[in-house]
Amino acid sequence: MATDRTWSRRRLLSGCAGIGSVATAGCLRLTDSSGQTETNEQGGSGTNQQGGSGTTESVGSTPTDDGEQSTASGPASEIELVPAWSGSSSAVTTADGDFFFRPRFTRLRRVRPDGTTVFEAEIADGYLLSISPTFRNGLYADGTGVYVGARARDEVDTGGRVYALDPESGEERWMHEESGDGLHDEISAVTVTDGTVVFASQGSGSGDEQEPLVVGLDAESGEERWRIQFSEGFIHAIVARGDRLFVQQTFGLSIYRLSTRELLEERRLTAGFSQFAAADGTLFVPGETVRALTLPDGDENWSAQTGRSVNTGVGVGETGVFVGTESGYVLGYDRETGDELWENRVAGVVEHPPIVEDGLVWIASERGDLSAFTAEAGELVYEEEIASGFEFTVQDGILNDDERDTAYEIRRG
Image (tube, rainbow, N blue to C red; front, top):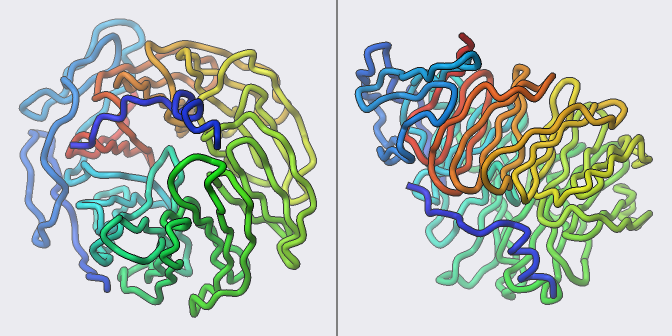
């Protein structure tokens, strides 16, 4: 079971203000309508532990101990989470249409939304794969490959690593390693643009102790092409579009000309540790003022002052963008204009970025509740207790979290 994460990013921010692979294929265990399971041939599934109480607090449904669903009463009980397949209780994120899990810290498992395992690759001991749906996600995948960062642990004398894996077999193509200077043990973000893998590397400690890097590698060979040195601060996200490179730090946004690495502009932001999100030619930046910047030029299309302490990255839907706050508010804004759509509230801090799919906005509170609101009107249609500080993601109508050993199909009543 995942370790309880009882801190909030805003409290963490206050404290830091100084600031070889093994490939397999097959299916995971599938769950039929009776709750019985069929074990896959490959084995190696995630830990089989159930997080939370499995009870519904107000609306929605959850599986009972025998694998069936219990549905709450009330007019809004129109969403059900139905067990679909198992073997999923580990750190989880999505990329290139699939789920990526981190069982036992040093393995990366790629799984289709239907539960089919594409590959499971293992990296060297002494490193921890950097994947997360919430905080410094170091994984990127497309048709050319899977590129993932790994943090160096104390027992090794090298820095962070970036691995390039075959997208279908998981076979290692190359590995890049930073020096063991103690300043670049972590890989906080990875992206790919025009045949170049771009990643950010930094260390631990306070912000003013950092000397972070953004490095460009040849996507085929892993050979270094260039690097940009920063004087301090944490790097949380990077986005490359056209000839522009956007680098988000705790309190600022730096824009570079990608071809020459010339610094074009620096902007002050209030995003803190929350990451921006790019979608369809727009970069959405969280903070007490939510901003929409056009890509690749970076011009501001709109800004919306929230009047609240925004504590999450941005969830982007077809018509709206959504953020969560320290005091439990969920705020929705029109994606094209920035006009306020609605606000609602959950019990507890919201620090997990909202996840938007199929007209629903999914929210995790720090105290352990999973909630779903309609993207159009903000109506609460599902609520369930999972576990304190859990993380989750959604892909093609399937929800996975890092607490339970089950992937759930999202069904509407």
